[in-house]
Length: 198
Image (cartoon, rainbow, N blue to C red; front, side, top):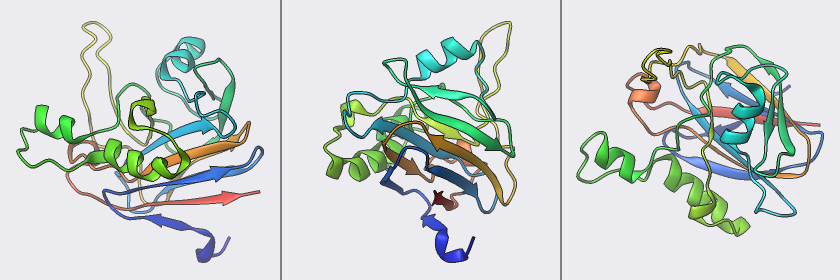
């Protein structure tokens, strides 16, 4: 791998790209403690999209890692995790948005967040904002109290250079961000790197 193979997502921004069946997507946290929101759609029918509900139902747990598939709303596997150096990611919480910052943080002039960044990046592919699902939040650390069900957003466990690798099980359109929420990223906004192989 050369440095030219690695793409950079600037802090508080997002991109979209295609992934062919069999290709691998590596998402890298270059500095540590930075979340990346990932969404994926069937390239040939964008009504089919990753599904938190189906994936977690079939896995019977909320923390996914190496070997776990990400299912679609039609119960087809879109992505499979094939390598994971962190082992803690979130598939419960929706992409942060202007509304997130208004409601949770009290911002009066909020950033558009990952939701807005994904909407802008996916628009050229004909994907509307209402079609953006719960994202697979790479490196996001959301502990759950097993008794009360309370959840908290804690600093990511990822350190500089940590990665998660997915293989595409079908042709995909992928949206990927460098998360815009202070709480999710331990108080600072950092870039995300990614590369496509195969």
